[in-house]
Length: 245
Ligand SMILES: [Zn+2]
Image 1 (cartoon, rainbow, N blue to C red):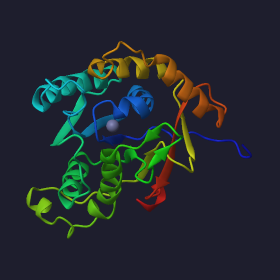
Image 2 (image 1 turned 30 degrees about the vertical axis):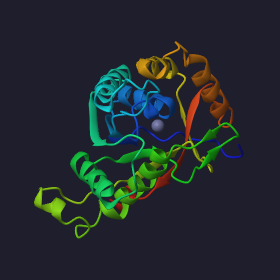
Image 3 (image 1 turned 90 degrees about the vertical axis):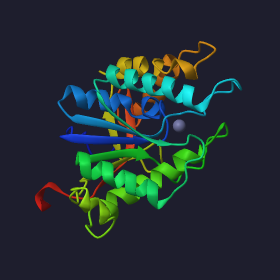
Image 4 (image 1 turned 90 degrees about the horizontal axis):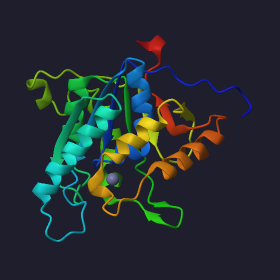
């Protein structure tokens, strides 16, 4: 890299939004754990409870959702996060709707995060092995639209004002797993917590596969670009600069 890269300092409050239990653990939990250790208040918002994440025809949505909410809370706890919100949308059938955007605006106005993290909504394919989940592709843009203008302007979802929720300007957005990466968080100190967090999602690894090696490979690959042993990388948008406050 031509100029020395400086990692952003941990924010006061960060809200991580994902479609399913385990999404955060695959992609962003190393950052969450690192920021928690630095004192950041972190909230996870899960749009679904993962009720469709099984090939077992005898498994019901309601039963699996209960199992996966417990796994998600356990995974969050490994990263030091106690604050987990489930919005209850149907796994596998999430659409980009105004209702979803409103629910995310509500969470932003409630929690008042400085940073919101979400998945890249533009990603349809990844390499030649993965076609992105439609739920991820709905939750990404809903989150970005909720950040701005949804959470900022009082006349958008004005009914939230009746709930006593004031507009809130998120300062920065971190978009994960996309192109045009510009921010690397060194997770060398929390990669083991990230692996341990993902391991909590045992319903997703029915054949006993362990995700440790893969997460280490991903983080090492990401870290190469920034000269870090292990990193998580993002495209970071600074919407409100400190001097503008
Ligand atoms: Zn997912």
